[in-house]
Length: 135
Image (cartoon, rainbow, N blue to C red):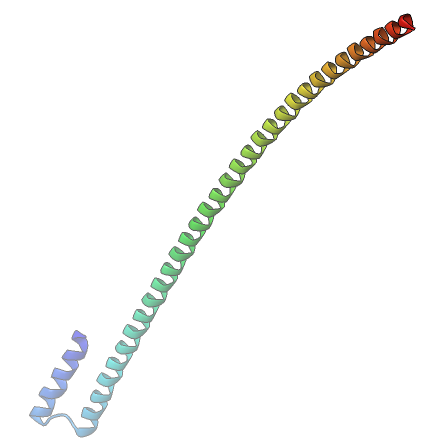
C-alpha cells in the first residue's frame, strides 16, 4: 500500500509540474490501478481461504462432537443391555428356585397322599375282615 501511495504522489507531483506527458500519466495510472486490483484480489483470496479453513475447522469439530455423542449413546445402550441381561438372569434364577420349591412341595403332598391311600387301604381291609367275621 505504501508503494502505491508513493507512485500516486509521484504522479500527482509530476502532473503538477507539467514535466510528465499524458501517456506517462496514463501508464502510471494504469499501473497503480493494476496494483490496487491485484492487492484486492490477493486480499479477497486470502479471506476466502481463511473462511474455508474456518468452515473445515467447524465441520471437523461438529463431526467430532457428533462422534462423541454417538459413542456416549452407544455406551448407554450397552450398559442398558447389560443391566437388562443381569435382571433377566436374576429373574431366571428366581423362577428356577420357585420351580424347585414348588416341585418339593408337590412331592411332599404326593407322599402325604400316598400315605393316606395306604391307611385308607388298611382301614378298608380291616372293615372287610370285620364284615367277614360278622357273617
